[in-house]
Image 1 (cartoon, rainbow, N blue to C red):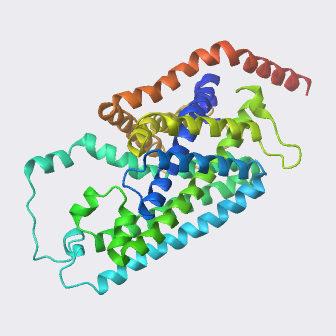
Image 2: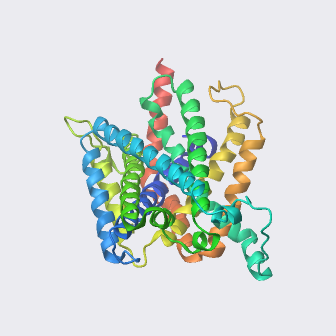
Length: 394
């Protein structure tokens, strides 16, 4: 909506189109791939999940899609339960780390990782320090870290179903950012209390290695299963909101009409949910699909649109200066300029480090223009004319 007002109908269509082929479906594929990797790792399977991980992730896609086809209430109940379980798991991880540190010998990993022992100083190879401090590597690290906060954007898709969204949305968004940031910091402190720096750098399944260090294989299995369930909760939230986003676009004539079907009893957008599941499945089944390649596919397009959304705040202030604004932007124009700058830097870093997957994602953004022009442009013009006639009549 912001992009449509700021830059025209095509920009709004491009966002929906890219969500369908890259952002929503790519995020779901990443989350469920990570969850399946942890579950298989905790069960004693080989480190590379291979086809078993793909199969488990695909089954998870269709399980959650089926649940959400039973309506918003069913999806919301599952979401609430899995979110509560996720909070319990994160609290448990932090407490285990603190207890382990308090019972550890005088010199523990925390002395090095958190600087709790001033008598230890380490000298690192200059080449390694240079590599770690490079701008590209730093920005790539930020891609993965900032992705942990990506879910706040999904709240806006449910604004239509909220009471007094002008009051509820800012509270929900700000509260969720601080809660996620707090949990993220506490869990990472817990890792650093238990594992050495080298173990953290070399680990592909950090929480699993953390749990095994504390309680052996059995504790690792418990934590791994909990993370798998937590991943289901994150993916469920994305599937729930994504289906409604594509349904709304199709209902307004801005996406294929087949996606605007609702089930008769539950009133769920089942065709949009099924189509979303098909694309997620295709991404999971692509050759060499794994966390790293899927993240490099998802990230550049994601931050391209975050940058565009940040700049749209400036454009809308210029184009519509007198429109009432229930959502304030403190310290304007610093926040939108900051988002725009960070977004551009992250997109450039992704292209520099993984040109193949980044180009594939950005190609979908580019393809959206001819698709909109030849397929959906007339639909939008008819809608604009209809609204003009209705306003004249009123």
